[in-house]
Length: 319
Image (cartoon, rainbow, N blue to C red; front, side, top):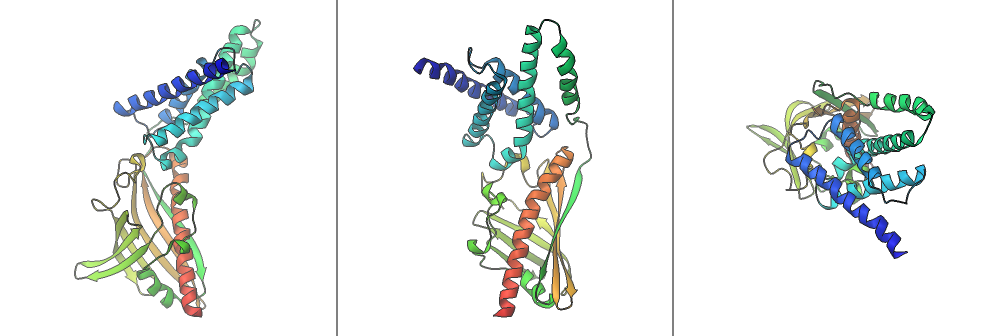
């Protein structure tokens, strides 16, 4: 029993260490990590390696082999987080390509082994077109233009626009109980704690604080009383605590930025339809996959703020 455990755990430990070593080397030689070529290509390579070095005499069936494959990759991903090679946000964004690429690499390896063992070649005739189609179907790493996404969300508030408008300027002392815990918070994004409106001869700004570790500025670019507040985002040096920001989704970095935002208020016969819009910049070259994550995080943030404004405004009216 002990020898069987050692026979399985020893290769597992070596494989995890080896895969993490390959990833570190990729980081050191500045491989383009944010690309479909790497997000799918590296897991495919890992799948081939994991299947080749699985314990002899174990995991012979197709199902057990895939279980071994997924287990080793899952441990490797978990270790990349615990060793701070990657943050939770990057892992969440990459988990689907990692899983699909690893499975594809493992299946290719198993198919090649079966081809070698099969005498008449009929298995190749059936499976080769399927694997070729899967490989050709992977997104091509063709250069794409940077994209600007506009993400908007809306809520209806049982209060007139003039009351909602004044509520939007400063939102002080936001308690954790006022902000429902969303998926983005579980991935490490802190909850907002206050927004402070500041007017001066140099213009109007709003300070946005998310806990003690995040403080950025919204420089007001347009304001129409009871109808519109628009701003450009500014992220000064030291706006976020060291180590909190994921290097591959760094604001103002090579791949990602947050540009501008606005509140739009519409009078609905004494009620207010409030819309919050954010414009983001994407140079990841990941197309629709990247757009999904932009919308995921900002819709999450928008809904938190819109619900907070609605609750505070309606509480003020009723109180």
